Image: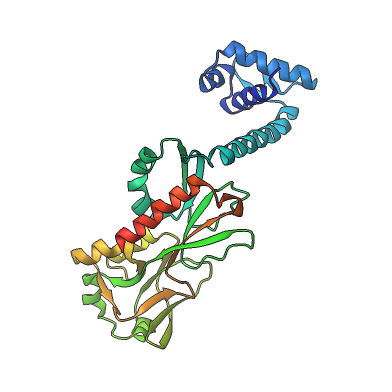
Length: 301
């Protein structure tokens, strides 16, 4: 019995819920899959699957075995890709985490060209604004906006910078007035990003002067696209990244305020960073994705 092939057959059956579907995924006849799983069960002396004419489910022993078998196959695939990726051409699975709005607006339009350029890379791009655990979630590289605070065993590489704009629609400014100084925001409806705490401070820097304003308003969100739509609709004043609202400013739908200041929420910085584990330093596929994001930053700048 080929143990690895049998493990693959078992895992596929468990996930597909049947031998025929598993066979189609593996490119094998259902009878071959049945024989592999039967041989595996015989070698273990335990039934891994509950079988009837309508469905196949995991037995109690199978449920325990599936978790370990799945991880073993993933570790084996990762070991293979780490070695093969050191060749002449980037190859293998690449799991990346990118912030939701930045990923959909800035990275997604270039994914097809990226895959065309690197035909041996299998890209799994996950959109999340959370600080992911690279080890637990098996992420090869995470792109993060703002101040990155990685753990000691994570490499942080700054790829570039961006600016944040304080913006509002003309309808809002006509109705509520234009704030002339940062402190004027105390009397305005501010739309702010949910960073964890209820209070948010916008930090205004110009030359050597810094002004901190505790902003408030009737709306906050953990998605910058939602805040952009609210600002366009006249709901208030928002602090948003240039890559998100530059087009709205150029079209006149949003007006930039406090253009002589650099503005950031709380203590955040306007940097774009790549986070990855030390064992990925020599990975060609990781470096290829870093090159993609770096080129997008330089082009937009």
